[in-house]
Amino acid sequence: MADDRTEKASPKRRTTAAEEGQVLRSRDLISTVTLLSVVFILASHPEVWIARWQSYFSRVLESGIHGERSDQSQLFGWTTLAVAQWLAPLFGVAFVMAIASTLAQGGISFSPKALAPTFTRLNPVTNVKHLFSMAVLSRVLKSLLPSAVILYLALNLMLKQAPMILHAARLPARASLALLGRISYSLAWQSGLVLLAWSGIDYLLQRQTFEKSLRMTKQEVRRENKDNEGNPQVKGKIRRLRREAMRRSLQKSMQRATAVITNPTHYAVALEYRPATMAAPVVVAKGRNFLAQKIKELARWNEVPIVENPALAQALFKAAEIDQMIPPKLYAAVAEILAFLYRTQMRMQAAARRGPSGGGAR
Image (cartoon, rainbow, N blue to C red):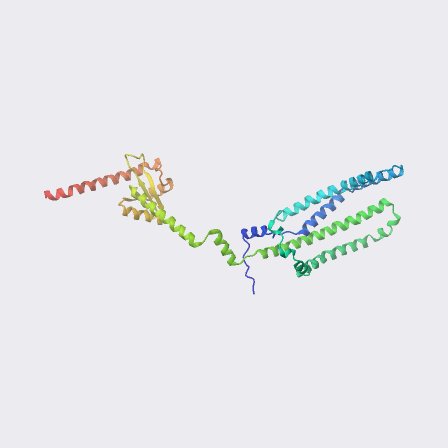
């Protein structure tokens, strides 16, 4: 059966995996970087490290030559100080490099869920099965490859240095130790580079496996989007309620309107102006496209005059918000339209009053 996990992991899926302790981490890469840093620190100033041990052995030997009876606590203190002076810098550098390489791989992750004990982890039968699983066998086989390369480098180095090694017994002690140090350093940094290259390849392979394990099915993606964005039925109901609320609000606003300025098809702006109580006209409703058509429909229903003026409609739509006065620069254009409407309304009212009496005179 084909794997249907074809979709990339979402941010929520990655967060959940991190909370459960599933993080991309190459322990081999951290160990290799730490090892190389320690090797280079030891090789950077070898005289410093040698001088510290020389000082320690000189103190111990002088104490024995002069017949001083150093108690065990004093000798233990010298030894502890020498070891601490030698190891403290190395541990410090190793710690810093380990933290840096961990941060480079995504940072430090603390997962209480991963630390919580479970029956599966404590079950000895399950643990024994893991020891003989294909995953463990695969890791062992993978570790044999860099080990074989390191063994080859060691044999090759020994063959090249064979003449010097054979005559090392004839050399002074200082020269013999220097030869041993050079051989050890060469083998150490070459082995470190091999492990670094292998751990880099292993990290890329783990990244590919990790990304594959986080993949999601299309159904899981749809379910997550549904959870994040909400149920479509609920969202549709909310949109309907909003439209109904907007329609009721628009109806109340249009009952107050004095005139509607239109584009005529794309924009519509409803204005209210009461000379006795208002200093300037106020925008009570405005809309574009569908909402503009709705405003004109309500204007006809409420017998509000509709005036087509494309330039003024667009200017009012962009310059004024609902329940705000129009800007002063549009006073003249709006006043001209309102005055025209007022005169037209007055003439219509006068004609309506004269109509019955005029008919009687005739």
